[in-house]
Image (cartoon, rainbow, N blue to C red; front, side, top):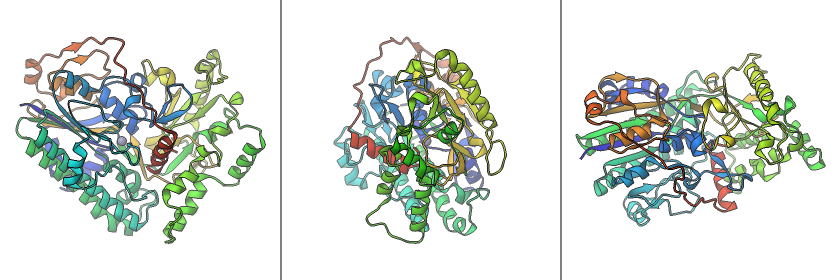
Length: 557
Ligand SMILES: [Zn+2]
């Protein structure tokens, strides 16, 4: 039986992997690249895990599936909740495989909690709320898996948000445990279920790049030789093991296999942060309330009572070896969580005097438009001019420390999104990532541009695509492949029709002429009223716990 294996290496980039391949640490990947097909894989805007995997799953741009970040608008439009699988609109490609009687294994893919009742097995991801044991479908499998392999490593236990030598050591141990565990479970389930399609997601690669980029990049301002000497071998060991596990899995699945190794986005260094709400306030687009409580918060914020300074205080104490029995990092994150109202936040904004604001973590700016409701003040007729003005200013934005223009790309929503959910999209997306800056929402610092005190690496648009197999081209480099092309390509390789409303296209340049000749591409019509899944919003506590976790992962500010 023809089989297809897709391994998603979260945050996988050639920037990290190519040097490792050259050093001989990843021989299986290197061989696949040499013999098969490879190239960069363009992520979605913004290149963030939740929208990126949602686009991979649906083959659609965020304007159609409605996921622009880890946080999604509530049904009633009032506020936001963390993403879960029921909030994504549009069919997953595995639903279509199931309809065509093909069983599937879908393992660890972000945004799949709660798991769907599919024909096959689905194991959800790190966005499973704490304590929930219903992240595996069918449910009885969890006991079997944990009985054999130990506790399922859904999350990290090490508070790596402060990188002390002890933390890094423990974190990397956890990474290697999770890596082995996930591959072993994948092979175990594959032997048991023998499905024609297997999708396995590996997450730790993304986390290593977020927290430890400075260790393997000598050009990073926080790089230290002693730290690199100590931990580089362990980071290499992780990637070496990743390569071995990939090789083992491919060999076990046999000759008739086609394999794609992909990532949801790339990675690169970050050292500076742009606080968009502070900037919008400075430029007069955002104004705070005048009431005494807000003014006290603002006064404190001006004098440095900010998440930035509190975090530095805490990190300094942890680094000096002070133990926090009564204040574990989770508690700290709750204190830092300005949405609780203790520190300056969007709750303190005077919406009747605010024309633009930022929320979410990757450079998204929203105009406070009348047409969106919620007390918007910007007339549609005024919007174009306002957008133009903000875009011009962003392009000229300077880092006050260096005096230099930051640069970066700015997009208007119509340029990068289309579909039913266009209205919810951020009006402007500002990505200065390639300059080593991340633009973020919140009021975490009282400076517009400051040192990124949390992350060492952040996402880039360029992910990876490596493929090998009977239907896949040999010794070929391709460019212009996009993450949204994977869903139609998978459907095509599995002999299914491709729904017309997918934005991606079959990656024909990655496939052999023979295969293409023997298998014409078929499309299917899509009824406008797709079946609706009941949307799950979860409890307040559950949402808060996930928000705290996302902050601890550096995904939310
Ligand atoms: Zn990711």
